[in-house]
Length: 171
Image (cartoon, rainbow, N blue to C red; front, side, top):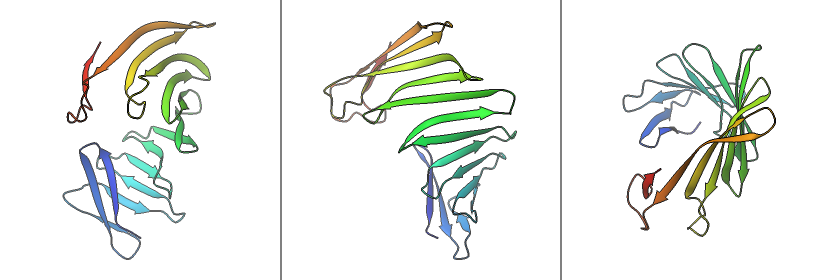
């Protein structure tokens, strides 16, 4: 197999070198262990006992914490459709709605019933139409969505201002 890089966060990469025998050796003080499964998928075993499963395409399909709780991730095309956690008795689902490559809402459902959602608004006319304008938090009353809180996002009008992507303030 080829060498692999796992992007653990915006400033954290974990490097793995193929050993030629189907395994991977971690580099640069990486404590995680990467294993290629027989079906072409990969499992990243983390030092705390958690694990992440990846499809052969590189997409994460499941995340398990150190206590054995597992979240599964499903996709619709290239976008995350749902993230679900359940033990057979209770199931929590985060359902994502997308439009034009941007997440428009995330709905939290418990045992199939709506609980809360966040509806995202974006500024029109910016470079990619992707600067977040607002996040409206709503709760399900049993018959309609009711606004709980709204957060507004404002940006610098410059090309590049560093790690905060031009975010001026959050109200």
